[in-house]
Structures are given as structure tokens and as C-alpha cells.
Image 1 (spheres, rainbow, N blue to C red):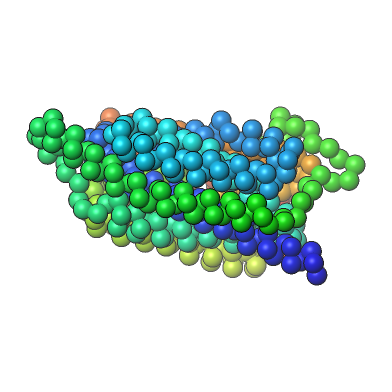
Image 2 (image 1 turned 180 degrees about the horizontal axis):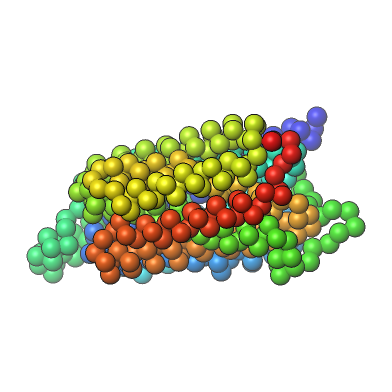
Amino acid sequence: MTKTKSYSLAIVLVTSLFFFWGFIHNLDPILIKHLKSAFSLTHFQASMVDSAVFAAYFLLAIPAGLIMKKYGYKAGILVGLSLFALGCFLFIPAANTISYPFFLAALFVLSCGLTILETAANPYITILGDPNKAEQRLNFAQSFNGLAASIAPIVGGVFILAEEPKSADEIAALGESAREAYIQAETSLVKGPYFVLGLLILIVAALFFFTKLPDIKDEEEGESSRGFLGAFAHKNVRWGVVAQFFYVGVQVYVFSFLLVFASDVTGITGQEGKYYLGVAGFLFMVGRFIGTFFMKYMSANRLLIIYSIASCILCLVVVFGTGIVTLYALVAITFFMSIMFPTIFALGIKGVGADTKSASSLIIMSIVGGAVVPPLASQITDMTDNMQTSYLIALLCFVIVLLFAWNNRSKVNKNNL
């Protein structure tokens, strides 16, 4: 009885983390649109926001795993929350100095915190309960990430995209002092939302600090971890790293550049586009809850195959379609992306025993795909002057996720067939 209560409280607290990092990640599309306009950036330069965010996952994932190995999940969560809050507060000097590199540095620090949080929270939620329901439990927790995805664009749109920004030509036509004043006013809009978020994260950190959490051991009796390289001995870990790299890359590109796509391809303004972004976040959330429900009746692996195929078909519509239907297809993709991250993660660490923390670090490390795929796709847009063509990269990413699901058929949970 006590154990069940402890697990319940731990699950509630850890699940709250999924909401917060989902919220901050889904402010990025608003931030990209805003900074692209304020600093008159190219598509490639604007994609550096994603690179700053997801480079942290590559650099910090293994140190995060080492922290957990030595000090446990709770210590990892507290360190992650501290860096998360610090990164939010750094947005204030970044705005005051009108420096795009400073914004990127603040995002990097913030994302170092997110890296440690995700490295800790994702495996922790899978082992807090019945192992046969690990995928279900992780998808449920990640559903609150989806809830944040539906709320963040609206909040960001109200407080950051308060009015339609000037075009690059309009900014260039301003005098030097007027241009500097305009950029200062635009960058200052981000200070309030990130400051408030930083304060909230500190409150959450205090709750974790004063709450006793169960110290779950993932080492099986008579077994010890083989280290980070040893975790690659597991086929599902190897495939999980590759699949997560390409999945996160495509998720980041789809969400981060949805507003830019709406503007460039369909001529929709940022003020109108934020509602499409909100719908995308809502579909992402609904997809997670529906996916969690379906996993009661079919394997997570089989559902991942179905969702991957649907995403590939919709990508073809985005690339070869015309008009508003391309935006509808792009928004619809978010529904089918919904279960991919948690399902890839859960299948990737499934059955690895003492190597769970190492495998978790490696799969979180592969989130660096979010720093690689968007700049690559953006470069194609700048070279071809056709944003739709860049979604051939997205199609390739979904094909790789499909291959991961197909190659992990042996990991299907027999109870869910």
C-alpha cells in the first residue's frame, strides 16, 4: 500500500516535468518566427535556434547518465531543473544586449537542463510500475507534453507575437537608431514569459527537493552495467538511437517551421498562423492520449508502424500538394508523430536491465537530430527557394522510424496483441 502511494506521488511529480519541457520546446516556433523577423535572419540562421537547443542533448546526455548512476534519479532531476531555470533567466540580459548569439547561449543553457531532465524522467517513469505497461505509462506521461504543445503557441502568440512584425525590407528602411530601438522593443517581448517560467521551475525544484521519491534500482540481481558502449550490444538500443535521431529531427522541423511554412507557402500571417500551430499542438496531445488508449488493444510497435506510414503519406502531400491543403497536411502530421518519441524510447530501453541508464543516455543523446535535421532542411529551402521541397527530408526521417518499428517486431508485448 505504501509502495503504491509512493509510486503514485512520484508519477504525478515526474509527469509534471513532461508538461514543462513540452511547454518550453513549443515556444521555440514562436521564438524562431519572432527572432527571424527581429534580426532579419535567413531560414538557415533562424534554424540555429534548434541547433543551440538540441546540441545540448548530444553534449550533456552522457554526463546526465553519470549523475544518475552516482547520485540517482532525484539528483538528476534537481540539477536539470536548476539549469532550466537559469537558462530562462538568461533571456533577460540577452534581450537587453540585443544579441542573437546571447539568445542562442541562453537556449543552450536551458536545454542542458532539459537534457538532464529527459535523461532522468523518461526511464524513471518506465520503471515506476508494471514493466509490461512501460510503453503505456510513458505515452501517458508524454501526453502532458502534448498538452503543453497545444497551450504554448497560444501563450507565446499572445505575449511574444503581440503584433505582426515588420518585414526585412521595412526594417532595412529604418534609420540606424530607429532600427536599434525596434529590435530592442521586439527582443524585450520575450523577457516576461521566460522570467515567469523560470520562477515556476524554481518552485517545482523546491517541491522535488522536499519530497521523498522512491529510489528504484534498475540493476537486476547478479548483473552489472556494461557502460555506455556496452549498451550498444542490445539491438533495440542501436536501432533506438538511430530512430530517435531522425524522429526528433523531423519533429523539431515540423513544429519549429510551421509558422514560417504557413507564411512562405500559403501567405498566412504570424497572427493567423499561431492558431494553426495551436491546432497542431492540440492534435499532438490528442494523438498521445488516443495512442495510449489503443495500446491497450494492440502492441505499441504495431501502432508505431501504422502512424509512420500515415506520416509518410502526409509528407508527400506537403511536398507535392498546392495551397492551403499542404498546411492542413503538415498540421495533421503532428497527430501521427505523437506516440513516436515515447514509443521509440520505451522500445529502445526495453529489457536491457542493468544497462537502462546507459541506454537512456544514448537515446537522449541522439536527440541531437533536432540540431542537424532543421538546418539541413532549411539549407535546402534557401538553395531551392521552395520550402515544400525541404520536406523530402522529413519523409526520409519517417521512413527510418518505420524501419525501426519493423525491425523491433520481436519486442512486441504479447499481452497487447
